Image (cartoon, rainbow, N blue to C red; front, top):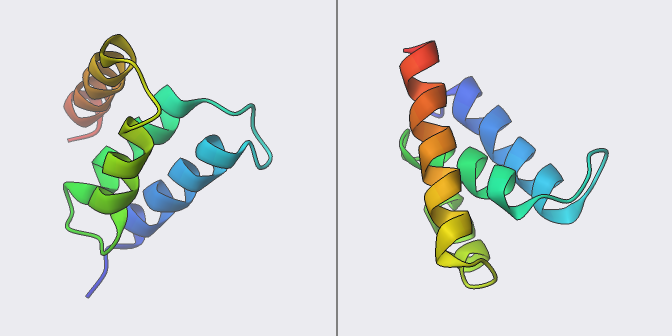
Length: 75
């Protein structure tokens, strides 16, 4: 069964990746895809990894740091 939180995180990832309703931001998109992938949501890991192909290593590290901070705050 899918976690509602993971589905919402995945949707936020797509919104940030495409700039739908929010400014386009690959760092935040990666963060949300990563958070959804930690809950094993189908397609989240693939979306995160595909997005990473268009990001710098520094951007990926920032996204990972933001995801970790989010998890620490909300766990």
